[in-house]
Image 1 (cartoon, rainbow, N blue to C red):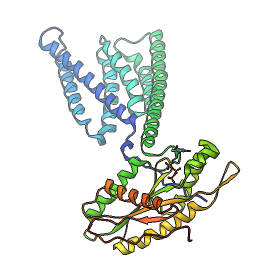
Image 2 (cartoon, rainbow, N blue to C red):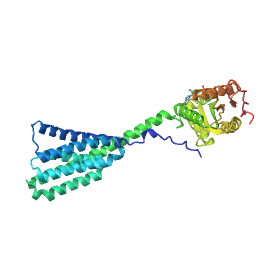
Image 3 (cartoon, rainbow, N blue to C red):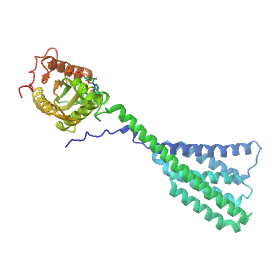
Image 4 (cartoon, helix red, strand yellow):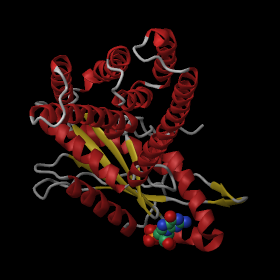
Length: 379
Ligand SMILES: Nc1nc2c(ncn2[C@@H]2O[C@H](COP(=O)(O)OP(=O)(O)OP(=O)(O)O)[C@@H](O)[C@H]2O)c(=O)[nH]1
């Protein structure tokens, strides 16, 4: 049984894109309603279009209310109450205009904006409830209106409301679908930039990030702990490509990824840097260098053993061994690049010493050489 590599969680995309669109839409509606009512007030003050005392007062209050609400939309937690107030206000304004200002045809504009807005701002169920309530209000109030709608007008406005509702439902469903697809595509793109597409293991970028984080974490703790990093390169991998083709080589690399993951803990990182190069990061786990070295050598022995077992690729049995370079960290003033470079150099030493073995980096220049590790040849 292969252990599945831990899935990569992306904290940067937690916010749903549709929510962002809803907030922008709410701001646009509040901005439009505030500006239009402000223009009416201005026109009245300039003597272009007299509103009458009560209507002027109402328009001023409405304009100011929209400005206040607009300023509050930057608080995410207030989104639902603000959207609900806007939708209810457009409903109330329409109803008021219906019973008291018979000549005001602008009410129709606000009303239809309110209907469409309710679907987008608060979801399809609220939108549907708003449509049904609106039709109910027209039918209930109609006989008593200052200028009652004719039978044909009632049918027309009901059909218009139903059409508006259907269009709003379709637009909302489409917009939500598009945002969901965009979100998925974004997640996919981000994971592609951090994951090796062949093996599904973390790539160099993600490894680099995890190594930096591990080093930074170590720097914050008062008690020093040590971790280890191993650079693993297959011996004569090119021959596999030459005899079984590139696809056969790929299948072998995938299987090696599985075997490596199966030997380490979930908290460890197994990355593929490219070609036949893998890196295994064992985060800070030991209180001193000797304990870290002992633990890392045990893991390295298991990796040499597991990767050295024969493989079956396309019905062919293939045997391949790895060379492993190991380094401990942190050295004084260590960086991610320096740790990787030390492990890489130790791996080249393993190649130079005949391959199929583990070599341990000497560490800092002032440090006595650490023991070099086990050979698989003798195992
Ligand atoms: N199948 C496959 N092959 C790859 C991929 N990336 C690189 N390679 C091949 O992997 C081989 C890497 O070989 P090297 O590590 O340089 O050499 P080697 O044959 O393993 O020999 P030593 O490392 O010296 O033991 C090259 O032949 C590359 O063409 C890949 O994604 N898939």
